[in-house]
Length: 274
Length: 260
Image (cartoon, rainbow over all chains, first blue to last red; front, side):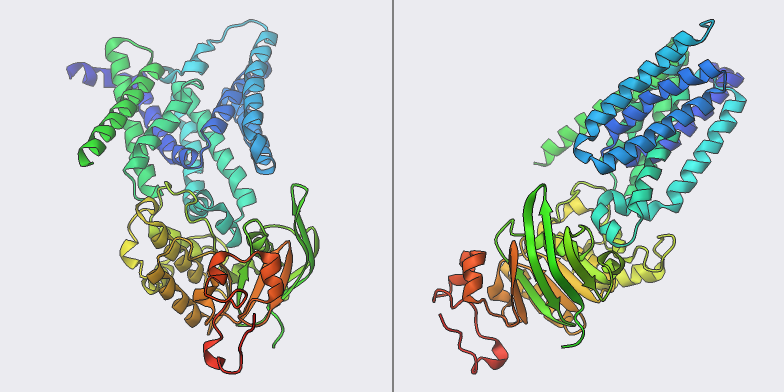
């Protein structure tokens, strides 16, 4: 206990905790839409295309956020158009964008003189190096995403549950769906800082997956997801600090433990009822 | 008859190269109660969706309230056939019915107190108010069907489209449903896609039989032509006499003796 209080004196740990909480907030809210709309694979495609943005940012010498944001938003819009026009082929297209994004990232880095960047930190996260200015940027992105979700909540809910009926009621599904994918892209850019793009999907899907079973409405599902995400991030950080493990991987392992425990408990409980 | 609320002229539609509807002409009058029958895959649901503007006609014209279907869709209450769409979705029954209040005033969709009261009123009318806090996965198909009808009514429509609303409702529920529709028909036009005309025959005013082409009869009776082209389902002709398929209209049973 003393050790934890001692640890909280360290600025980088305080920043890490704050970054983890911000990521949990976004994962809970946007991840809920990802899970109920079955956009997990599509989000994976956007997340991996972000690698191209990281490479481009290094190559051009511009800040990471600008490169990744541009790339992921572009990928999100392309995927939005394709999945709306050719639904039956969308998984193939996602696979292509996924691979092309990664390959572009590698090639941009090859072309960048003086290889001096720790790429592992973008693949697996580097929450312990989150700086104060990173936190400001992340707060602004979070605020934008949360405002948009809150403003369009009922439209997004209607579109997610019954797109046809939403359409009939005049909900602009053709604009709202690309918007949702852009929000997913923005959240991914933020969460990559915390757990890396390889691991971003787990934090996007596990809390909403667990929450879904116990939620009577989409709002409840978001709330439970946020709380679970925070629990996983903070305990992951704790284990990472105490056992000297990679923070991103620790967070995911805690989330995975939550996933299996929840599934097992659910299974046992259901058996007992029957 | 007044100016028809639905006017379809020479409508053609095909899906993936297969013709679904051809040369369809149809007028639906104000406060008409029309039943659409026909074999599975005959184009009944497609016709509804064309009238709702969800599909675009390949050829021909559809006017709803004198407008393009896309511009008039919000004045139609729609009860889709498949109530099991997204059955595991975490949404409360209240939120499902509130979808009917979406965009009713334009701008941001954010249901207010009035919307909740209105939604509650229609849920009570359909006998599903007790379920308002439940989740869709907890409801039976029949209950969900009623919720979807409440949602359609919550849009305060001038016309109601129902796509096989009785498919998952028991006999008692069907009678209640049809009595409700008859009452609603005093205020609005009703178009119902159905298989069981027997129950409905005393409520409806006209029948359209759809099997690529559309055959219309402005009385609640099936014509011999319909029997032939629409391969009428067994329950239509099981009541004794072949081709003498429907009870005469209750109100004027005497002057109409349908013949085989």
